[in-house]
Length: 217
Image 1 (cartoon, one colour):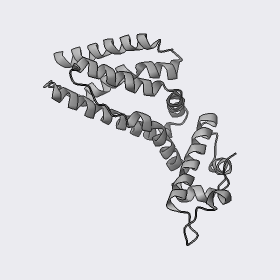
Image 2: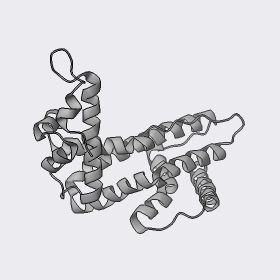
Image 3: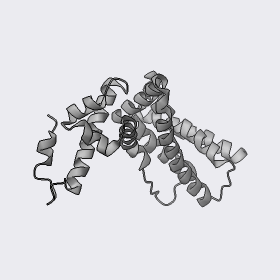
């Protein structure tokens, strides 16, 4: 049962009667979590700020004070959902080849995208943009962050191997398309990515194709 605003505020106020910093952050997270669940269940057009407020046990004013609009709330919901894919950090064991490092990046990023929770958001993004084009800038902004992360990883690895690659932004998009295709196929076409062994084989071949293109360009 969601906490009511009154219950949430009790015991968490500063001396002046305002919510403490921690309580304010907790309340913000409750709103984001509730909005996330409703968005996935009912879609962007199917929910209102009033419905989110009711489910979260707060007032609409509480939500508008923190997010100003439904679009701003959705922006934070999507940014929170995308965090697992945007915060991966890779530390490689000595002696790994460039191929092996790229395969590891591909496997870990694809595993993140194949997680059931992330699959829900991929489906939301794919179908949400089709139904509501106004959501496109929000989703595209997150994709750009994802590509920037991949670009930094690739640039560092290429530099470590003294491999000169022209047009890195395009190469990054190609790499992204290759390694994320199993997850996107599952989200959009319900196409199963195969066993872990099959996924590893796919990733190895995908990286081989990618590197061949980089070295012959």
